[in-house]
Image (cartoon, rainbow, N blue to C red; front, side):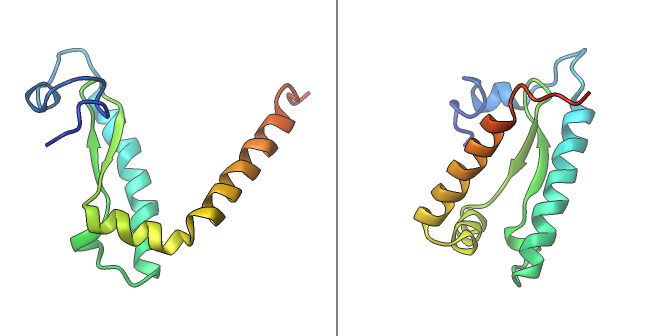
Length: 106
């Protein structure tokens, strides 16, 4: 079942319908590229991406989406290390991004 919060409130049935005029292919291509990167990283960790890898998908508005089995998500979380380390890395990236805001290239 698709979580309605993750799809912007659409139900399972709504997320499976195609709407004319929406570019699903571009979203799927972007998701495919992201899935290839993630799956390559998972393979380096010895994960069987045939069972646990990311699968590209396009959402109901054409947005790129990756599908991942729960065990795949657990393996990724385990590979990232303790939650405290991940939070520190995210906080550091946010600080770096803020320090570069407004500094456009000439």
